Image (cartoon, rainbow, N blue to C red; front, side, top):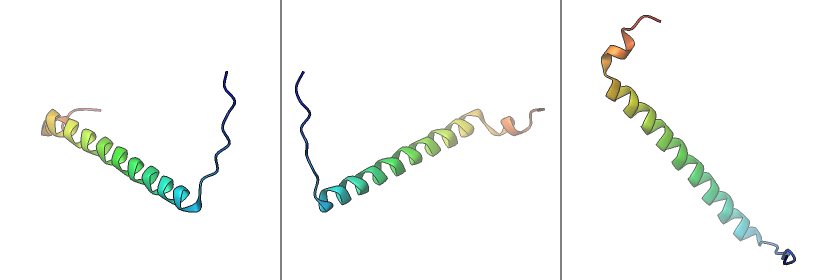
Amino acid sequence: MSEPVNTTLSPEALARRRKRSIALALTLGALAIIFYVLTIVKMGPGIFDRVL
């Protein structure tokens, strides 16, 4: 097994990583919302008329 490499990132690299992580999280959240809305739309308006 190889030994782990100890790399330290500069503050600029850490800031870029954080921004990229936030962008990825927002993108995944938006996709989840889009899929949810599309699912409700495909079920049609009758989905809200059913008895719980």
